[in-house]
Image 1: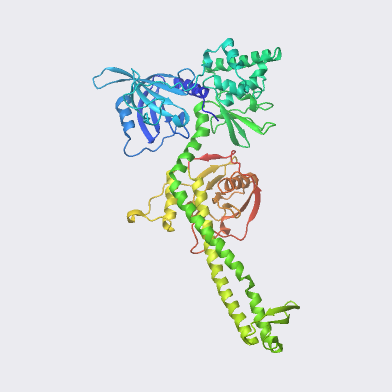
Image 2: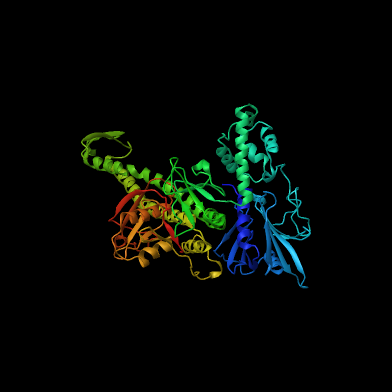
Length: 615
C-alpha cells in the first residue's frame, strides 16, 4: 500500500477544493513529528488537517477528530503560530508528481506588511519532514533538523536554502509523450511494471501493475518483448494509452479512491479504481453491484465478494480512505512505541515465570514414582520375613495389580529398615509433590495474568488505555509507584459496538475493564462471551429483556475472538453464557472468572460487519 505521487495528487485536489481561501485558526503539535491545523474554510465551515512526518507512517489527510496536545507547545509549533496564525491559504500545490505538498499562506507581519510563506510537507518514508520556508526559499525551521552529518544530499536547517533533492533521474509522467514513453520502456531489460515505476516519478508498483492490467499486458514480462513486432508494438501502444488515460484522470482531478479487501483485511488502496482486483474503470466490482451510500459511514461497498475473494470499497474522498486505513494503523504504531517499556516489563516477567513453571513441572514429574516406594514399603512389611539376611532384592506379589515385582534392597539393612527407608522416600516425595502442586498453580495463574496483560497491550489504542494497564502492573508489584503517588483517575472506557439488529455489545480493553464490565455493568440476563482457554477480553451483549437472535451471538463471539490472542485465526472456540453464571473467586487476579454452565461455538475473528461507536 503505497503513499505515491498519484495519492498525493488526489490529496492536493481535495485540499484545494476544501481549504483554498481558508484561514488557519489553530495550530497544534500533538506528537513530535505531527501537526494538526484547524482551518476556517471560505464557506464558513471548519476543518482539521493532519500533517504527519512520522518515519514509519507519514500521512496527510482531512479529519473531523481532534487530538490531545502537550501542555507546553514545542518550539516549532510556537514558531508557526507566530507566523501563520490567522494566515490565509492562497494555494495548495504539488511539484510535478512528487510526494510533496506546498501550502502557500499569506499573512501580516508585525509591521502590518503582507508576507508570503510556505509550509512544505514531504512524504518520503523515513526521510519525511515538514519544512517552513519564506518567499525566497530559505528554510525558517523544520519539524526535523537534518544536518550534513546525517545527510550528504541536503541539509534541512534554519537559514539553509530549500530545494528538492534529485536522488533519482525520473521523468514527470504528466508531460510524457509516446516518443519519450517508447524510449523509456524499451531501454534496458526488466519487467514492464518495474520499468514504469523506475522511469516515472510518483508511480508506485501497485499503480504500475494497474496500468499493465488495463492495457492487457503482463506486468512481469520483460520490456524486451516490445522490440518484437507486431505483437510488441501493439502491446506498447496499448500500454501507452492506458498510461495516458490515467495521467489524464490525474490532470483533470478525476479521483475515485478505493480499498481492496481480502476476507475483510485491506490488501491494497489507490486513488483510482483497481481493475486488477475486480473493479472496472468506472468503479464497479466485476459481476457485482454497488450499494447506495451507507447512512453509517461515507463509503460504498460491493455487496458480495468477488470470485477471487477480494471486495472493493469506493470512498467519496481520499481523506476518508486514509483515515479508514491509516489512522488506526498510525494509532497502533504510536501506542506500540509508547508501550515499549510496559511490554518489556511484562515480557521479562513472563519469561521468568515460564522458566520457573517448566522447572516445577519437571520436579513434579520426578515425584511420580512416589507411589512405587510406598508399595515397596508395604510389601516389605508384609513379606519381608521371607527374605534371607543380606539379600540384595526380593520378589513379591503386588496385591494391587496381581503381578510379581522385584524390590531392590540394601543388604546391610533388615527388611523392616528397608521398608522404613522406602516410606521416608515416599513421604519426602509426597510433601514435595503437594508443595509443588500449590506453587505451580500459583505460577500458572501468574503466567495467565501476564498473558492477559500482554493481550491488553495489543488491544490498547490510546494513552488512557495504557494508564490502566500500568496501574495494574503497579498494584501487582511489577512496577514501583514513583513518589508514593496516588492511583490515577481513569478515562478509558470499553469498546462499544452495535450490530445490524441494534444490539449493543461492549468489549473490555484490559483486566480492570473486564471486571467492571462483567460485575458492575452487566446484569443477570445479559450474555457474556470469552475465548476458551485463550487470553482475551470479556464481551457483554446487553439483552435488555429481549431474546438474542443468532446474529447477535455470532457478532459477540467474533468480537471475543478478535480482541484476544487468537485474532486472525479462521476458527476460534468461544464460550458464552448468561452473566448470572459468571463468578469471581475471592482473592483472584483482575479479569479472572469461573463459570460452570456455558455453551460453545466455533467462529472467525472478522468484525468488519460491526459498527464501533465512541468508547
